Image 1 (cartoon, rainbow, N blue to C red):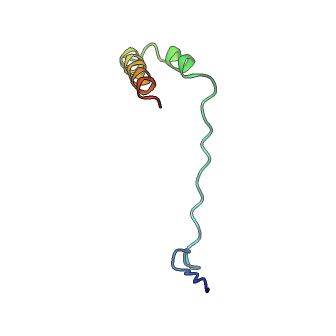
Image 2: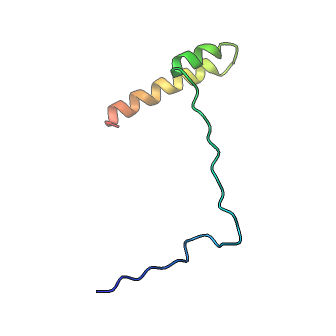
Length: 62
């Protein structure tokens, strides 16, 4: 049995490969981050929507 290898998925030699930039994750928990955003009008709404989403995911078993 022969295996066939195609190289069409490899990038061409003319273009340099694109490197992904490393973006560090914010330190601390989301509760601390939401606590820092108290001046934001959407923070309480986002907090409530996040709680509803977590409850739904827990009910569905995710």
